[in-house]
Amino acid sequence: MRFEGKEILNAPLDVVWNFVTDPHKVEACIPGLKSLEVIKDGKLFNAEVEIGLGSMKVGFSANVEWAELKKPIYAKMVAHGTAPGSAADVSSEMKLSEVENGVELSWNADISIVGTIASLAARMMGSVTKKITGQFFKCLKSKIEEDINA
Picture 1 (cartoon, rainbow, N blue to C red):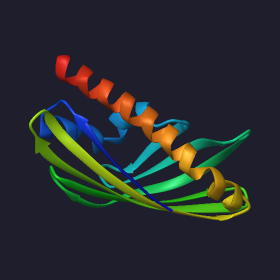
Picture 2 (cartoon, rainbow, N blue to C red):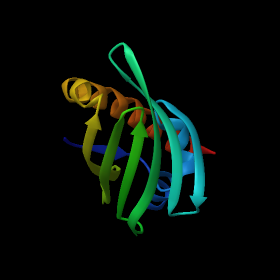
Picture 3 (cartoon, rainbow, N blue to C red):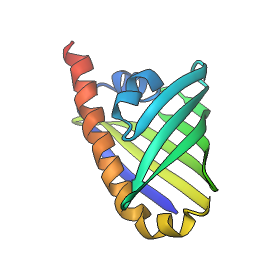
């Protein structure tokens, strides 16, 4: 499954870059995040995430890696997560570009889920992804504005 979107953030490019590539700053905005552990600063971390799929909640343990960082315009992240009887692989890219009102953040994510939750996830992933990304970017905008005004 492929998902993509764009957001305009009213902040300087360096502020947006420093925020979105810092897992300690972003963690407050990740819906369902239970824990985050940085294994190698700026490169590798582990996360425990709980995702609601209808009336069912699924907990994933994920290894996440920055596969490529081109400061301050491009980042690629890959992740592999496991849940009981299931697994997920994610490849996501983010591009930042300066625009008149701040920074445009373009993103895409390719998600592959196998195992017992794959059929349920396939039916619900569109609405779940829309809800999660909406919550994430609303929080992200708020936190970046807080950083600017601090």
